[in-house]
Image 1 (spheres, rainbow, N blue to C red):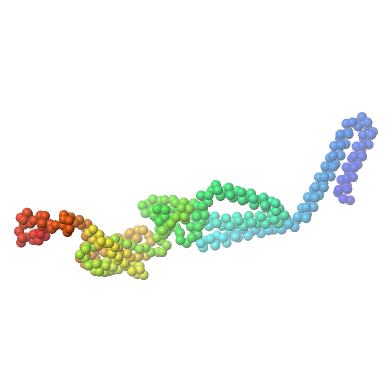
Image 2 (image 1 turned 30 degrees about the horizontal axis):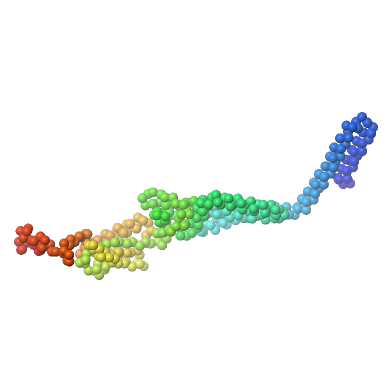
Length: 349
C-alpha cells in the first residue's frame, strides 16, 4: 500500500468522523461548520504540498546524473586550478622577474579558468537562464568599473607590459618624460627612477609606456663625445691624427669595434671647432663621466706635447671700413719712446 493512499484514507476517515459528530450534536453544528471547512482546505493544501514535493523529488532524481557530473567537473576544475597556477608562475618567470606581476597574472589566469568552469557547471545543470543573467550582470559591472577606474587600470596594464617586455628592467639607465635616472622599481602603478643627484621620481606607468623613452643600458655601450677647438694656425690633419692616437693609446679599453672619429664642425670666433667621438662598454653614468674625464686629460696632454694650442676667445677690433688699421698706425712706437732695436718694438709695430 502506497503512502499516498494511506494519507487519503486517513483524511477521509477524519472527515466522516467529524460529520457524524456534528449530526449527534446539533448544538455544535453551527460552530463546527467552519472547522470542517478549514479541515477540508487543509486537506486540499496537504494534497497540493505532497504533489509538489513529489514533483521536486522526481526532478531531483531525474537530475541526479547532471548533479553528479557537475560536482565531478567542479572538483576536477578546482584540482586543475591549483596545478594551473603553478604552471602559470613557472611560465611567467621566464618572461619577467617582477614577483608582483607574476602573482597578479597567475591569479588572473586561475580566476578566468574558474569563471569558465562555473559557467560550464551551470550549463550542465540546465541553468542557462542563470548563465545569461550572470553574463549580463558581469558586463554591466565590468563597464562601470572600467569607466570609474580607467587611469588606475591603464597604469596596471602598462606596468604588466613593462615588466614583461625585455626592453625595460630594473637597473637600466633611462631618460623619459624629461627625467634621467636608473630604474629602481617597477610596480603595478608606477615606475620609480633614482636620479643622479640622489632624488627619486615616481612616474605613472601609462606616461612611461605612451611617451618616448631612451634606454642607455640596453646595448651595453655608450658613445662619448668631446667638443674642442684648435687655433687657426694649426695643421688640421695633424690635429685629427693626434687626437685619435691620444684616445686609442690612453689605456681606457675603448670599444675596438667602433673607430675613434674626429669631425671638424665649424669656424669659431677664435678657433676651428671639432667633435671627437668614441665608444666604451659602460652603462653607468659614473663610468661614463669617468671615461669622458680621462679622454679630456689624454687629449690635453697630447696637444701640449705636439704644440697644438686650444685658444682662448679672441676679439678683433676693426677701426676701418675695409680691412681696418694697423696697431702701429693708431699707436706709433715713437709715442712710447721704444727704440727700433728693442725686442718689444717688433711686437708693437
